[in-house]
Structure formats: C-alpha cells, structure tokens
Length: 236
Image (cartoon, rainbow, N blue to C red):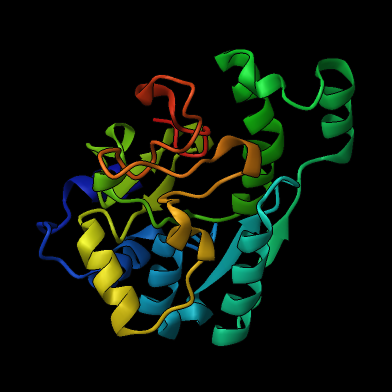
C-alpha cells in the first residue's frame, strides 16, 4: 500500500490526539527509517522530551548554517547532555558558501526574496536533503498556530518536495500555552533568547524579537510579507 493511500485511510486525528500517538501512527505507516529535525526551538525540545523513550527508533539531526546565535549552540549542548543523545550535525557545502559571499556579500539575503531563498537553499535546504536521504520520513516540531504559512498543516503530510517522504508533525494542534505549560511542568532546557522577546529563533541576522501583538514567527525574515516567511524546509 502506498503512503498516499495509507494517509487517506488513517483513523481520525484531531486536536485531542496526543503527540505520542501521532508519532506512533506515523512510525507504523512510514515503512522504513525515520529521522527528526531539531533546531533546538522550544517546540523541538518539548517533542524530544515527549518522544525520548522512542530514540532507538529514529535518528536526530540538526543543521548548522554557520550563522546561528550563540545561545542556540548552548541549548544544543544542554539538550544532548540531558537526553544522552547523539545529534547528527549537517553543514552547508563550503564551496557554495564561499561563492555566495564572494559574489554577493554577507547580507545578500536582505536585498530580495530570490536572494534570501538562495541563501536558505545553500545553508539549509541542501544539508536537509542529505540529512533525510535514505529515510522513509521525517519528524518535525511544527505547529499550526505558529504562522499563516502553517495554518493548514496536517499531522501527516507527503513531502513532495523531498521525494514523497512522509512528514510527521506530532505537535500540529498544540497551542502556545500548551507548549509552555509542558515546558515548565517538565523543567525543560530553554534557549535564553525566549526570555528576551524572541518567539522563533533562526539564523542571527534573520531573527529579531517580536512584539506582543505579533505571531510567533513574525521575527523571522521580518522585512518580507508573512506568506513568504518559510526558509524552504517546509515548502508545500
């Protein structure tokens, strides 16, 4: 049975379905090895905690774009130590980064949407493709409530951009309050930038703190229209 057909025959998944159950259903229909994308966001740390007893079933990878904030590296180290887990790091290709910066400078991504997507492709998308190569699916900490670009997200999706892999999103229905309540209850490690007004954390030059009336991803590529604020990792 194909993954697409399997998805159409899944049991009812709704906001009351526990993330662990969403993961287990996805695992059972994936048909092969899984890997989890981890950016060490509050979502990803909570998801790691929720799925910690299943670590033997999937690998965990992170992408070092070369432009992360120091606080992100610090939380990555804390997470690896707390869960005694190996994080498989992937890096952009040296030659591609050198060519981009020599030809277009260090901040070309701010000059146009096309240039920003080029930078994201080099630093994030190409390493992602290597990270998920050979798997049947990947797990993310994405939530519907995060932004307009994720409002129609489903717990299970077919990633047609990356060869039709199954994409499992266990936290799809979680609200911001649920996320923080779980984090505090279980005393999870949190990137200190969250306490300084940041609500979504990416590369240093592409992330700023947000205002109380803004959505949680408004600080990512804030100079662009909201519908464009995805790096390409989660293109539809």
